[in-house]
Length: 441
Image 1 (tube, rainbow, N blue to C red):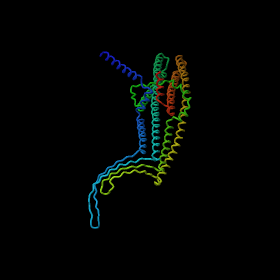
Image 2: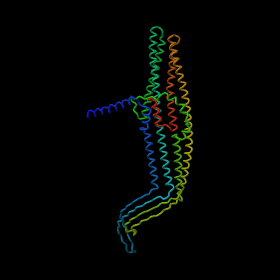
Image 3: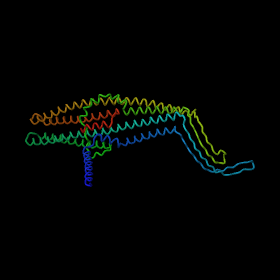
Image 4: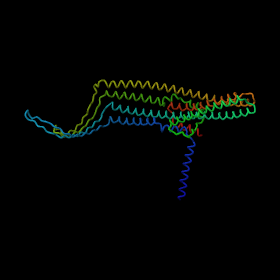
């Protein structure tokens, strides 16, 4: 029995170790960096606490209409002198105690009720800001991921070119030994090899910097980690994405617009709260006093009263606060209009950029095929003696440039797709996971 238990535990541990090793070897996916950014970003954590603070603000506003109960107790001593006539007086000491319990309850207060409404709007605004910041942080992680991915893909192309130029140099040196190539051809090949090596070195350092940026955004340790690439075919869904009415989607869901609407609602609620100070207030007051002192014969008192407070004049401060709140409401209205216009412009820019990127990728794909055919023709011509080495290098350089442009454009297309969702307020973890699942499949 013990042997079976040990074997079972060993199988479980081996299975867990195998799973962990497989996950380690699988690399870092787009969903990983997105999730890590949402969990570890300090700015997002700060906004979460701000939201919790606004929730407590609602509870504080409710306290303004709930019963206020206060109890006090005092003990002291006093010295007093009594005059009976012009010729006689008496001086004595008195030790006194006093106990009070007071209750104050708002029956009607327009300002207190509107303060609750304002606090609720402030809580909603904090929630909108938290949601919008979550999308912005998530997109920043996606942008950093795709940037590092693009540089890495470009680096791979240059590495392939470097290997090709190394083989070409060996070929030229062999041909030169047989008298079929000149020293100038060998120097040209060596110069092209050195230039490519220098470019590769620059891309390696740029890629490291991009990974450091990804670490800063997501909090992940990228040491000895590989990024799982997104499928290059994602750009093909561009026409399907552009079928949606993104302007309409953004008007109802864009984080910037929702924040601006929340700020307008908050300004309106603040104005209504300040206007409430013009209205009378009705309070119910109750108190109990137990007073033990020689100075008065009122030993115990219980009092209940209904109190009306009518604001008559406070130096114009109330009216000034109302006008100030109204001006802030005007400012929020125009800020909302400006935000809607900016989002509309950004959505138009992104959609047009996506459409242009889609056309450019298709054109570059065709150009890559033509450039590859030109490389084959130039190499065959060089071997046949009808093309020069510079022609071969020019065709190879052209092909490498097209491939690098294609790689950059594909990643730019992916970035624009996510940016469109981010600007419209529809970027979610499910979309990121969907892209990640597509890359695995």
